[in-house]
Length: 335
Image 1: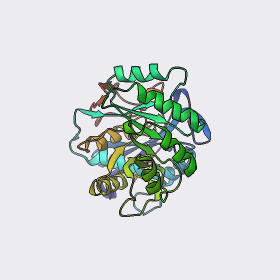
Image 2: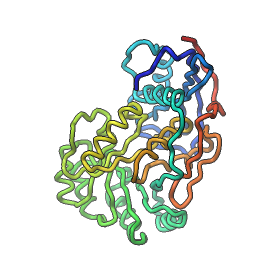
Image 3: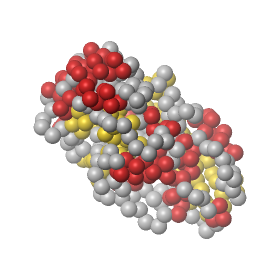
Image 4: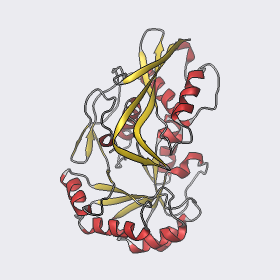
């Protein structure tokens, strides 16, 4: 996204720290709070647009401290190699500053994120079904493979016809472990598994031997190919990780050209970044998105509750809101 620096008057920064309801495991870190930075771009006419810079510590390549240091030094009149989360925040702020009218549809279908409790998996699943979800995402790869197989098969056993499972392994397995898992689970209800191992080259074999399609997530950070190997069924698109709106839209177009499903997904953004994800998700004609993340935060920066009804987010209008609730002023400078 090209930024017209001639219209900018000032850049203002805020920081926030919002508690998780329970600590969140992110890579090798246990997070108790979601930390982030709000960037406010103001034009010469006094209108403002907000963005959210929120690297997920333990998952993003940059930390929140590194992102804050970089955005403090950002000069919009020069070309810089920006961290992915910083670019997403800047692009979102400029997009909100210059867009004339939002084009968001009334609701967006989402998958329910399930962190399985082996003592009550069936009850957890029944509660999600009662809430109207038709797609359930399960995290795997953190327990022994046998326990993950049991969790998925117990979930599959209580699903009504038409409800699908998405899996996410975060590259936690070796290829042989992924094959063991894929051959032992009830694959007929599985839509895809995200990143079962850390190589794209092994995907065709995994798909051929298990019949389970693979979704790319972490592999997209530096993905430069113009197509996808056999067995890739979806792209899980996290603009905070990918580096902004433009990069995400490029990958959406690439996925659609190759008949691969694009899935907009959240990194627990809590304010204007989450609102931007809703707008990107709403631009897709079909597809269930990964935006069931606000429920893990004690509070957020949104001006009103985001309601989930019958497995879909009912999209409110955020465009004119001052996104500074529960955040702290850092610095402001003029241009």
